[in-house]
Length: 271
Image 1 (cartoon, rainbow, N blue to C red):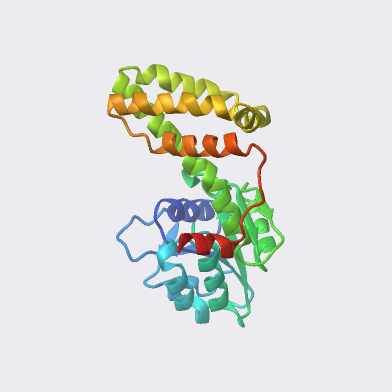
Image 2: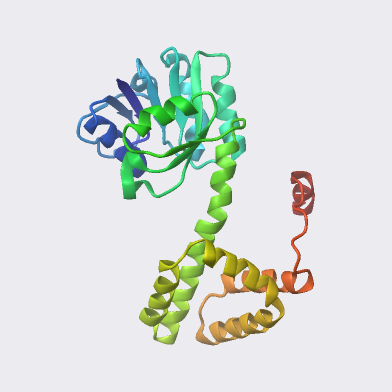
């Protein structure tokens, strides 16, 4: 089995390493002077890397995703699975798909659902598109759980962005909390509080956060305002706390969730 990995940065290097360790003949390409993993043949171009590969993993970064697909489109093997694992929005993923339209190629549009350094090629994924089943079969042998999604190209990217609302927002909350703890001289105590709460995370915690926020929004508005006042006094950032105040203020005025605006309404509001 032959595979190509386009982009040998942190994530791409780990995928290339694990595929080679599993017995695949792996070629890789990266224009940057990053290390070549053991067992991987470094190609001189993206086009050369994909020659004869049954599986192509694109981990080039969002800004290069379309250009790299264009560079290799005429060099892909018949029926190859071209898997775009870049953390791009749906529009970029669709542009990659259009680049491969009309060719004997199966595109898998992929969302990476955990940090790759944690599990390497066994990292959980969600995928859609004509190549999703093939990708699941290939990486499933390396221990990766791959959820195959119904829907057009862009579906997996949308799921990834929805997950990022939580994951990146959670990171911002922890950063702001620890910064405040450091400013108050009790960062370790605050860190232990966060760790204890997250250790028991699960459906019950999510339910409590959602129902508790709606039920007690008016009271929590006052509490979070006091939080902001204290952080200002400490000279610590308040970005996330101010966003929390905005959410609670909204819930206090309308505790029932309303219909989500459609994309046209969002774009009009942004103008």
